[in-house]
Image (cartoon, rainbow, N blue to C red; front, top):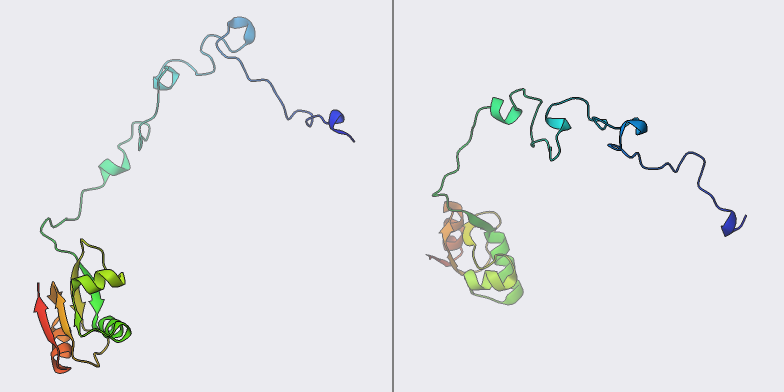
Length: 148
């Protein structure tokens, strides 16, 4: 077998059906689109969610839920993470800027310190919010907290 002998398999290559080319083609007149209706017209495209005239699902189901426009979203950081960061970098004061440089938050995020883990050293912690257990653990270890 050589390259000049290669041929496609029989029946695998067919010519494109030329529709709308008169009655002699067998595909003239309605051009395989049937009679009348939106699908027979040029420029037809079905709307997303269209169910053939039946009331679409997104209109049958009721609206639900609520988005509170006053919600404040915090990035949660545990005191165990703060303790590990202080040990690794030799810090006594941990604030927003230190967390940003360590890659825990980006510049737009607000920080809430949570009480998961433990604190071994006295830290000065600066954040937007604290849980009660985090406040208690930090102050018991001899540290201080300050809310921004």
